[in-house]
Every structure is written in C-alpha cells, then in structure tokens.
Amino acid sequence: MPVLGMGGYFFRSKDPAALKAWYRDHLGVGGGMGTDEKGESNEWVWFTQGGPMVFEPFKQDSDYFPAEKQAMINLRVSDLDGLVSSLRDAGIEIAREESMDGVGRFARIHDPEGNAIELWEPTS
Image (tube, rainbow, N blue to C red; front, side, top):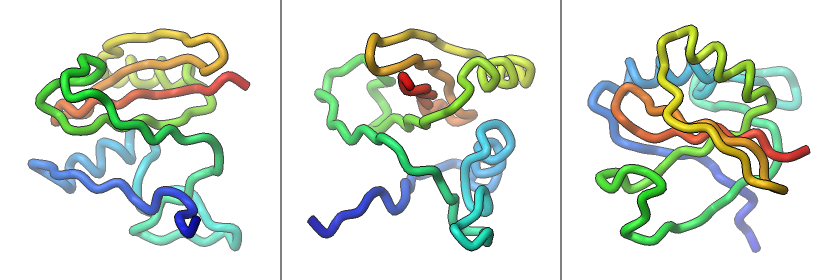
C-alpha cells in the first residue's frame, strides 16, 4: 500500500488563530512543535513520534462523542496523570476518565469550540 500514515488533520474553526494557540499552549500540538530527524522544525509541521493510531468509523448514532460533531481527536500521550493535572490547573474540565484492559487509559476534554479530545496513554 502506498499510504504511510496520517499527513494532517484539518477542521473548521470559528477562530483558527485562537484555537491553534489553545492546542499549542495546553497540549503541545500543532505547527512548530517537535523536530525532524535533523533537529529542525517549521511553523506548519508538527513532528510526532511513531506509534499506534486507530482509524475507525463510528456508527452515525454513536454517543461516544457529541452528535453534532463529525469527528473526535484522539491524542496519544506518555504521561496522562501529569497532563490531566496541568489541564485541571489551567481550568480545563476533565469530562471523563477510564481504562480499557490491554488498550490503556483515557481522559476526555473539550477544546474552546466544543470539539471532543480523547487523551490516550496506551498500555506499555
């Protein structure tokens, strides 16, 4: 197969600059974050670490994320407890926390525009 992985995730926003700053400031996500194999970065690309990724369509009537939203972001993290603590300190509500045997631990938050974000710390 010629597909190597995700190349980007694009979504609409009422205030793209503010939402981009929120993701950068609270989650370390977005352009200019991380570096490539040469230690370089750029303003458009977020250099991520390799690892598992789930690509899964959900049933139209799923209640796993808000019905008015077409998608949910799932971010793989390495220190869920530390991240949840810093998010709470910033006044960001943790909507739910759960564990799945053999899969890992999860915490759900929402960005300022109501998009669900699932934080996933895979089982090591």
